[in-house]
Image (cartoon, rainbow, N blue to C red):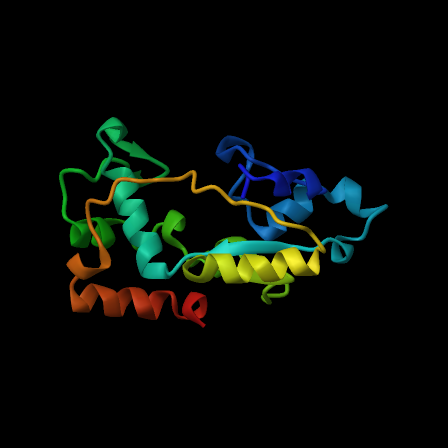
Length: 175
């Protein structure tokens, strides 16, 4: 999305992970509070993308398995995972904040409810994004695939027991 022409329509956009690209709804509210005095928060069209939770956790594992990730510890999680199995990665990190459910991390406001106008499922991206474009009355916008990551493990490689644990932990994300 950030590599597309959609960004020219955004009232607020943050494209760097270091400056808050993955910030929560509450964090966005706090960070840009000065704007909401003149333009109410509710007047902004807020949308986001959610990944299938199993694919999301696998993506974290694959990301941490990249050869350049050989750092010992940061924020309590083991950064480099290239020397452990997916199941070990899950066991070591499943309770750490970076693996909190996506809905809790990004979409839920202070009242506990989803605070977005629209939630795009990554698995149905083109169709869901078409609805966002219609709501915003935008013309054709091509969304290039920018983030291509190493696939060391896929969903087929994950044990049934771990899949079940992930399904339980991320029940609200699936819902």
